[in-house]
Length: 278
Image (cartoon, rainbow, N blue to C red):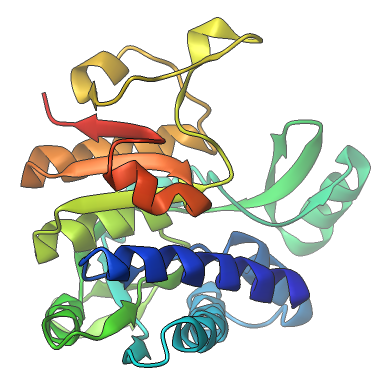
């Protein structure tokens, strides 16, 4: 919990700087570690319910720290449903890493006991679950209304709560975890956002061809066509690059990857890797 509060405080500081520079800010976030840990505590719970629980938990923490950093500003955390296609091939090829890291022996045991799919993550192993592409953010108009009213809005936590739509037009929950970057890109497209900032613990995007002496892709901006031939890590940077390009091609805006502490410097052109269409 202390780590989560610290990270939320760091995010709130970055948002405060952006708001001070005149930006209206919508905050999205991941939930990979939390949803995996919760699945261990609640083994009978469906994955979309765990998504909702973590979105509420992390939304509260962010709402709290944003309110402390910006006491004169209204802040609201909104549970967000994201429509996915139940026929998405991701359901037969789980790739989204969730939960803690395990040794190979532990991972094999858990896969046998719980019926999990597991995959390597560097020197360790993690549970992997389906991560279908988002088709729509159900509450995007509510988010738009809040932003237009000057409310800092926290939403699409962990990629949102995955739902599908049946033949009668009714929604139902789906066991999956939607990629937070793809959900954020779709939300940004619906909102006609100027920027999609994907803030991490990395300085920006590194050219994977230079391993182990990788070069940061600077100076910015970098066009999507320049990134197309590069082979990024599938579990980390590849989804960010794909989501960034989806956003900029749809909106004509800018996307960026960089450190959370550098958020304002990124939009000012002084840090991170900025991605543009073309």
